Image 1 (spheres, rainbow, N blue to C red):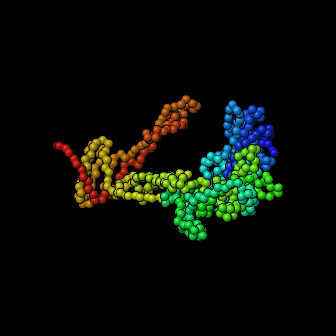
Image 2: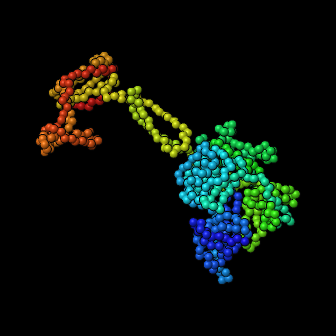
Image 3: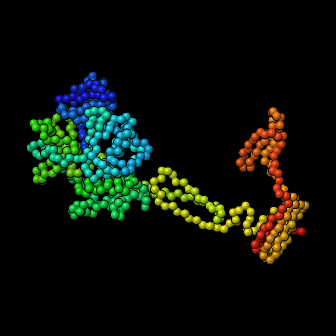
Length: 544
């Protein structure tokens, strides 16, 4: 009998735990294996055991695997003092690293996707070995707490039987994704190697039609119509529906963003759930220990034949678990869990239960509506430009709707063009302006330096406005004086913007430092303004 080997975190052998007892293990198919053992509290080697150390578990000389010590529990009574350790298979090291951010994989092989996930390990414990599948499904993950979960999800859409296996005898450890073997490796029957049997039929999750839905909400939610001849559902095979039909199921998994992957996953799930699941729990004798020829194997994932005398039937079932509770005390006692179908952590059915996940079909929030009001003046020469932003992380834009209403407004120009006139009073006095609706009128302005404006009668016409002294100047640079320098005529000049911007700039140049102005305009000049027929209403309240 081989004893448990204890290794440190660098996989260096520390000790043999020859006093270990109540050694147990559970190796479920496509799930994380667990193990455990106990030690006397007074065992001096107990002090060498630390959390996260590794142990190699054996079952009467047969190696089970390499496990990592996780939890411990002490029981100290008058009669005895023991400490019990709970362990997880080293596959659990893939739960140490995370997948941060958003990751999308499109049109890549199964091997490439697994290797991509394994490359995200912070400590490279695992590498990929054998991969029997070449699939091109689309995957996406976002802020996953482990790498093991995304790795298990790789095989979810497969409609073929698969098994995750590994080689943990050499480091870095090797992970494999292999196809099931349909070879019968053992037989179970009374008076040979079976002591008791428990048969359980589960029909609550049976479905014969599935409506898969993926990413999105409402009319924008992903379905399979585009890859399923316009149908939003998948039916079970005809022979199944001849036996039982009418069991519909709406399956929502918003992790799916590709219709082909969603279709394949839903089909695989339907094939596993279209018939009731039959589970056998067998209390058996570990025939491998007493078989002189070592022919029969009852390992996890193997196919075995069960002869049920009460029903007088023989059925071929897959070994889902092969656990032992006490390798040292009862080495021949083994518990086998057999199923007529495979439902494991690598399949979608492990993620959902029809009666426990009803809330998944409820709305997770309606489709977002982003409304942006807009108002501006525009004409053929000055278009209104509407700008809106779509964030980079938006997955789908369902609709863009533009609703608008136009109203008349005064022309969008610097000078009035054919739409009336603007008359300003002169700087040195006010002005009285009056206009009639269909006749001429006189516009007079008071004060010196003013001008007279005459509007033509009978339907508008041309208005001429004269100006005396039309020159104007602008200060461009404000003189800041002379700066002492060689030569002594270096001036400081400052340019100011309009008051609203509060900006300025300065420079030095030869000169007296006085302010700079524009030279002037063209002098006295006139403008011709055309005014169409129009009416002004003016209320004047005054007394003379």
